[in-house]
Length: 297
Image 1 (cartoon, one colour):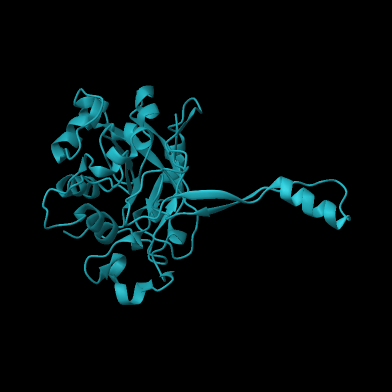
Image 2: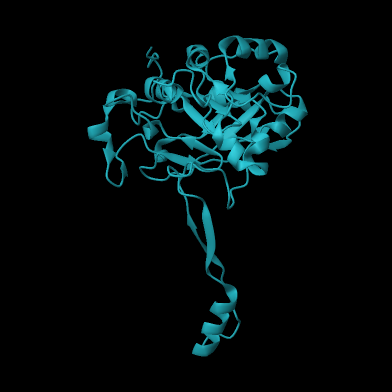
């Protein structure tokens, strides 16, 4: 089922989040009562979970170190203040760590978001449109649906489907109701394995199914985030259908997905509603971007 394109940011086809108006952002900022900031992202470092064979791993080393720079400058005998310079080199996919998927990350056959097509959108060196450089700044009402706590355990089991009914019960538990313009964060508890057991973290995961995704997009959300690798349940409900939530949210609806979020601290604060802010790095033509989402309480 396709989403309504009622509020598409026509100029850049940057999805629902780009249609937010200043007044809506100001209302979201008013939700901040104490000014306390809660980080919703993981530190990006070597051994971050990644799908081997699909994702290159995150690697970082010093490209230039202070000792070698000082030695080189001393040999030249011109500069006398020993300026040590440290610079790193990083190799990674932009889908590692806490990140936001660009709308051009997925297609449904030839079709991409905003009636774009693969042939006209996907180039050899990146996306011509729908890339990470078009992801807008997001300032919105954030809602935490703590499904793990509602179910009474530390976390949902691997492969557990988060259903529409579970989301509505989590709303009731948190005293909130998902609405237009909201950012919805779903806590499954699976994020506890992000750093402690990366192999377990990526092998399988609890997450929403397509019907639950429809519940959120029909309510008018702009962003869906979760504390797992793919937001949606893995493996999927139907082995003959791969990543249907990604197709629905990114291709049909222009709703961004934020993956590998850190939601435990926010859950411990007991706040279901907060000011959500997220910025993405504007990588031209990239299919995702590292993100640093925060909640301001």
